[in-house]
Image (cartoon, rainbow, N blue to C red; front, side):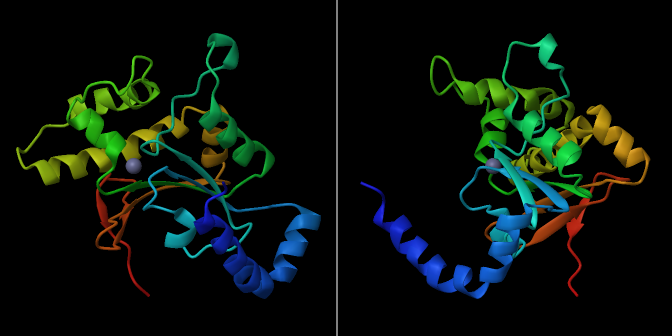
Length: 212
Ligand SMILES: [Zn+2]
């Protein structure tokens, strides 16, 4: 049975947001999408990008995966794997011609913690373990202070930097960035605090998003 929570939510959407933004939806349906922002975030149910950034329909092209990771560029011919995240990135950059890419990390990320704590695989196949193993060299490169909260947050921030660095391994992204047609940004959502931090590209440090 379809969850009642969803059918109720849909009715609320239909009479609320869809009703109020009907023209916008009609235009998007007829003309197609042309978002200027690609956002790469975590699957975590607490970190919905459209909610955090108050985004309307058609404004953000969103990719969500465990721990907001971007794998390094890899030509399909060189690998037998499927590349869901890379395919979506390629579409957003090459077909939609987005102007900004935002990698959004967040507090208490389960995928990052799994690496930090070196947890046992979930299953024999363990897709999560393989996926987040990309973070292991990042974790190994960070000196630990011994303060767990600080060390986990440092790793969560470093993972955002890691994904941004991997974005630059995509030739079409590098070319657009160097031509000034595309900007990359790192951000981090505090969940419990509601605070948004922005990454300084020069230092890799995060600081609170200035309020207007
Ligand atoms: Zn997460």
